[in-house]
Amino acid sequence: MKTIIINHMKNISNEKEFLFSIQCSNCHKEWKSVPIHFSKAYEKPLTNAKKIVYQALFQQELESAANKAVKDAQKQFNYCPICKSLVCNSCFMICEDIDMCIDCAKELQENGEIVES
Ligand SMILES: [Zn+2]
Ligand SMILES: [Zn+2]
Image 1 (cartoon, rainbow, N blue to C red):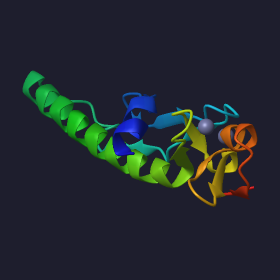
Image 2: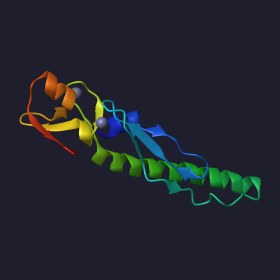
Image 3: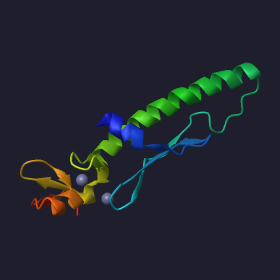
């Protein structure tokens, strides 16, 4: 699940904040992560050496922000085992045998309850 989320997650960060988005394959609703500020967003590196330090720090904070976004996204998105798409909670159904997206449930005539309506 984590890898699937990572593959679908778009990095829309800029130099001041870390931000990620995922789109539901079914309703195309876009989910955005909670923006996290880069700790040195408002500090200019005074020397070239500091610039290198800040760049490394940026990479590190970007990675941890991405990890957090993946964790949050896991609560918002579900992977349909039938059509292999990533859909939001409003497009996913808890069915009797196996949980799947609403389109597949309709197609396969499975009954269930939507995760979040
Ligand atoms: Zn959706
Ligand atoms: Zn499906």
